[in-house]
Amino acid sequence: MTTVENYAVAGIRFVLIGGFLGAGKTTLVSRLAAHYMAQGLRVGIVTNDQAADLVDTQTLRGQGFEVGEVAGACFCCSFDNLLQTAGELGRESPPDVILAEPVGSCTDLVATVILPLEQLYGQRFSPAPFGVLLKPSHGRRILGVSGERRRSGFSPQAEYIFRKQLEEADYLMIGRADELSSTELDQLRQVLAPLAPDVPVLAVSPKTGAGLEAVLAEIESEGGGRRVLEIDYDIYAAGEAELGWVNLTATVERPNGTLDLDVLTERIAQACGEHLAGETAEIAHLKCVAMADGLQSVANLVHTGGKVDHALSVSQPVAGPVRVVVNARVAIDPQKLETICRRSVEGAAASLLGSVSDVSSHALRPGRPEPTHRLAASGRE
Ligand SMILES: Nc1nc2c(ncn2[C@@H]2O[C@H](COP(=O)(O)OP(=O)(O)OP(=O)(O)O)[C@@H](O)[C@H]2O)c(=O)[nH]1
Ligand SMILES: [Mg+2]
Image 1 (spheres, rainbow, N blue to C red):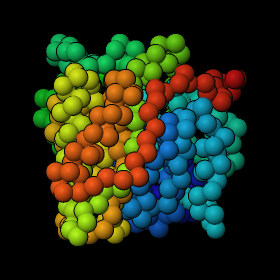
Image 2 (image 1 turned 180 degrees about the vertical axis):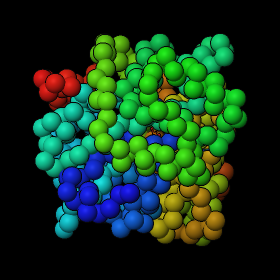
Image 3 (image 1 turned 90 degrees about the vertical axis):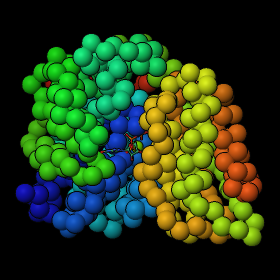
């Protein structure tokens, strides 16, 4: 069982949770953080994105966690920034556990993050075995469950990233298990077996907490296999560059009236989803947070044609300005995506008799990953 004492001896337990965009990493990180805090451990969280204005940072901070953000590039390419951000968590007394969520289009994390932490900064950090969440919706299509190899909506290069993420795991977690039948779980286990032989495969539901005990046991086990990938960075870079990336912020206001934050985020996500379906553009993850009076509503879409889900809900209407942040990662031209996001925010606000101001956004395609370090298990760069 984890105690403050044994983490204090071993250094900060550094827990990296990998997995594709929309797999459920933030939801799992939040569950794990709550669990460790309830045990009396000090917890810090690090989020990561290619651009500023992250929904995940807002939602985790809104839940009362201490969160540092590495923005502008993935952990592997901003390794020193990751170290600095981790070092700034819990300034008065360092955390016992750091939970870190990499960008969901990132892979090769064992060689570029876990081994450098272990081999170059092993006095400070004790990296846990690396767990990767499988996203069932895209996983079924990309891995060809039951021979139903359907179009995933992504190019072979982006599918390559999805597979590589699974290959480097010390343990795999099939996410959203609450939505899967036992047959569907078995089918996923079968297609995972050749990709990741000899790796434990857990069924988890970050949203309900089911399966958390088994994840905790993996995190607390000693040593990971440190599965360093054989990976072609040209394919990896092409796969990442296929995604349009938009982070948009805006203020929505309804003069002399109140706004229902859940309806607002749902309408924004719904409108984006409809526009993108019209473009036959596959959504990797589209999330929208609306914040006011310390309250947060978050609406998510994790594939095109999917149903809008609320990761966080607010029951009462709010008066006054509402801060909205949209993060969209979609296989489409980023400028087109930016226009769709702006129009969707404006349309949703207008449908609630609200107005939009202070709009700002970043639209980009992720650049080629150039890791700060890339270590082999032997410690050589
Ligand atoms: N039904 C169900 N939904 C879940 C579960 N875990 C996460 N979700 C939902 O899946 C969506 C994506 O979850 P996130 O935790 O934001 O996913 P993520 O991997 O952090 O996404 P990125 O940061 O964009 O890569 C949200 O709507 C969550 O509420 C689960 O166990 N069951
Ligand atoms: Mg996340």
